[in-house]
Length: 339
Image (cartoon, rainbow, N blue to C red; front, side, top):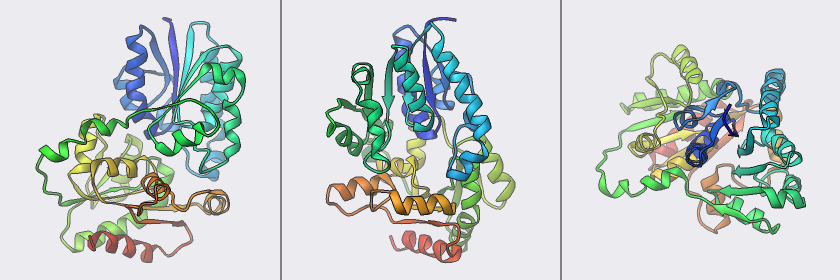
């Protein structure tokens, strides 16, 4: 095996941000090995664990998949112990990456952490992992979100602000002519999340179809695509493009996007497309969020706008699975129709 860097991305947001870092490491003459999705693999990452098995959503999901997740973590830890491993690139995903980072520090290896834990929103004690003399010496922090940059700078930690990959295409809005007609529905990047949102998103899709407005479901990965095709055959389902530019154009050419509070909302903001943030959360996770989440909003574009004293750009309808689904669907429909 050649000299390599270990990568760990467990979510689609990490896969998007990790693509350029894979290229960066390979340009330096090292191989890239570890966990990552289609975009990172397209850039040259050799995947050693199934990316589709890494994303989890909510406490129940973590417990249900605990055994398999532990197996994947152990495999990555063994690679980190390999003497040919030169360092760790951690992409978000703190459940795995904080453990991998601690091991890398004990081994004296370098770490690049892209989008470290959002200490300003949830569990600020996690900053302690970055405050040791060894961590300050060996960990390079990067983030494309101003909130994260400011949060770590408050603790005296250097953190590099990077551009979101969509930023490279933002000028296309001025040069390309689009006639947005379609509503894009992104019910979740995990099958468990898509299952919880399925009935709600179907109701929303039906409301737009009654108004003769085209809708399209977008799946972030093949297993989600398969699940959607099997359960909502009356509506078209497409797989999200691997190319960042194609994904940007897909977002920009939509009339509106309905998605969860993850990276898709930020992508819609970059693409200049109106977005409604909507999701149904399993009860325990919903209650924990109510108790411990330190922000008034849950979608990053709204959080950043609120912190800057601006009006949040996107309506949010994030509720527990016990809430009235029909009322939630009607509110989503009205939010888009009133634009």
